[in-house]
Amino acid sequence: MKVTVKYFASIREALGLASESVTTDSATLAALRDELIARGGAYADCLARGRSVRLAVDQVMCDEAVALVEGAEVAFFPPVTGG
Image (cartoon, rainbow, N blue to C red; front, side):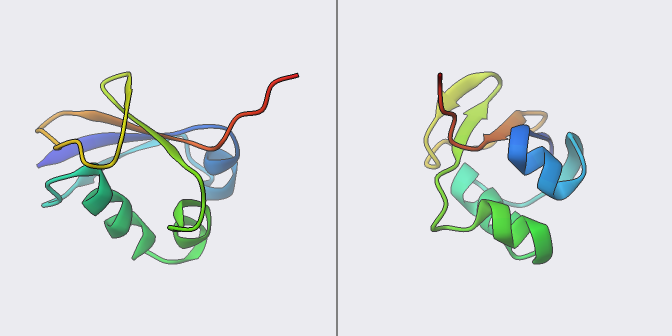
């Protein structure tokens, strides 16, 4: 299936892109995150399992157990601090 993946803030800066279209067989957000981590480099660094990353599907915040569907918009956010 094809999904759109959007990256925000420090993740976007580390990867050097705001979004990309990804063709995946991943059934869940967790599996998609692991697939992206397996790319290595900046993906492995900023999406690593030890890092706190927020996720959303179709603009709704959710956890990694959420199932992916064709055409979904997936977003990865780093932790946000307020001031």
